[in-house]
Length: 165
Image 1 (cartoon, helix red, strand yellow):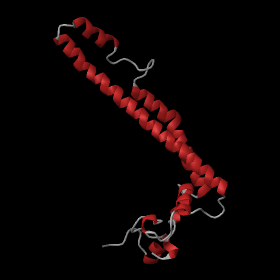
Image 2 (image 1 turned 120 degrees about the horizontal axis):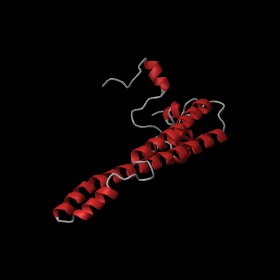
Image 3 (image 1 turned 90 degrees about the vertical axis):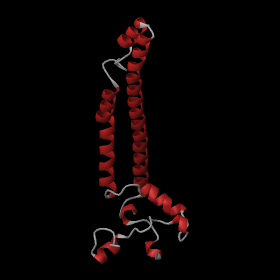
Image 4 (image 1 turned 180 degrees about the vertical axis):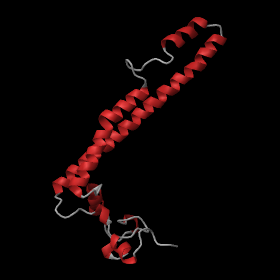
């Protein structure tokens, strides 16, 4: 790799005119969205675990009846099986409301901000941090994944994709 290619790919280079504070602000916005992505994953975990527990109640009711504990089976079936987790809501409704009310608007705003303020180039803050922290020329500190090409190389070869084997 030549020195010219020993740096971030063009998609991770700051566009002309984008200042440090804007890069930092977009990095912070992206970090906040990444945290929301994790929260959403936990919400899906809550949804799946609650659903699994509710389905397991069918077995508990069946076993209570088999053991002659019909009153307990009736109570579990009546009071817990299929119960709302908050008034009027099963977990899928909570997930849908979260997505519609918070996640999708947040995600859309972050994408629009990156497009408007950084020509759609994502992770500029991280790319610049990587470039500042890596040791140029060290095989375990490469700037790009192995086999990647710069836009200039693709334009010179006239190819849109990776080279043929």
